Image (tube, rainbow, N blue to C red; front, side):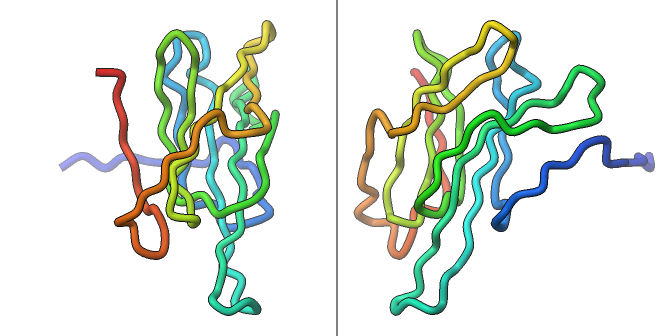
Length: 138
């Protein structure tokens, strides 16, 4: 059996509970990641999950995560990247839907999220929230 030592090289404080992190599969953007967050608000009945979807990148030294953009609103419970002619990021949300965002690539190797979803698909059978997703261009 092999024992692997793991250490933290960079952190990104989030204002809410981070639920999912996914690194970008696009060539040249492997240092970019998406972070989906949510927080349960029990003061409302029924309780509501509010949250955010943020993009960040690992700096060249690998010591710092830098947030480049975020979309605030409904809780994000999962996210997944898709490479097509455009770079897309989907989010499974606490509103029982999947939201697809276009990601804009910067000349400096960073990426930012479009402020509005370019598509939304209801997940009618999801119950209280769309908990997970996976997709493919095939």
